[in-house]
Length: 307
Ligand code: NAD
Image (tube, rainbow, N blue to C red; front, top):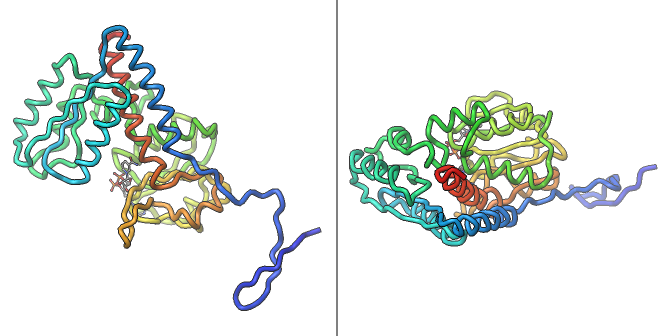
């Protein structure tokens, strides 16, 4: 027999059935906690490498004075210091030529103390990002943007995974969420997030659909997802009516809303009661990205030292 509570809404008292045993709260996956564990493991392995005389080193190149890029670069330098890596920053003026930038990358490709090279994007308009990415040695490409590394990810035989999708997978793994045979929907098809995200879910035997700006019936497709990843770049784009009851919802978006407040691509307030797991913004996928960059740099140091 059904039990009811009386709820006052729409100017009248209504009887609402109580669903006993049904949990209406999602587990919030803390990127702060998961990333702290990844960084602690990297630090431990870095300390071990140092006993063998190897100090992992990351070079970060920043061209121009984009304030968001400056924040990201500072965070990366701080993360390096925390895990015990050597970090070198190359802050170049906005008018740096392509030739000058490529010369620096060539020097860093050949610099023994540097294991990972990262060129902060976006670059000023006169520089060609594709040429710059292609110039970084694939073995030092800790962002995993080089076409050779992208190809390796396709065939599942890779050195490095792109940091943000790898961070999402780490959260999934840490929570013991089984991807095998699940309907996975990724909203967004960028080379940095959407496409590699879909590939990593596919490697874990998910049945993957990629949605994008031209997708028809987005709501219906998203509503079929057991695992939904949002990488759109639009504040609170994913609303509760797009989410299946009990879905795992992973929010990659980092946006500012109309009040300048940091928010994700998912409307957390309405989606959280429907989801089984959800990542918050801030404090979700964001901290994972830098932790995975540290993991890639450690791996680069090991590969280059034949460990
Ligand atoms: P992007 O602009 O390159 O790609 C956005 C994607 O969203 C595109 O593929 C586009 O087709 C799709 N899209 C746009 N409008 C849509 C719509 N109406 N319906 C369905 N799809 C639509 O962005 P990106 O680089 O992939 O980043 C996505 C978001 O993730 C941004 O908010 C970005 O700031 C954030 N991000 C976060 C991290 C992190 O560390 N957490 C890292 C990278 C990016």
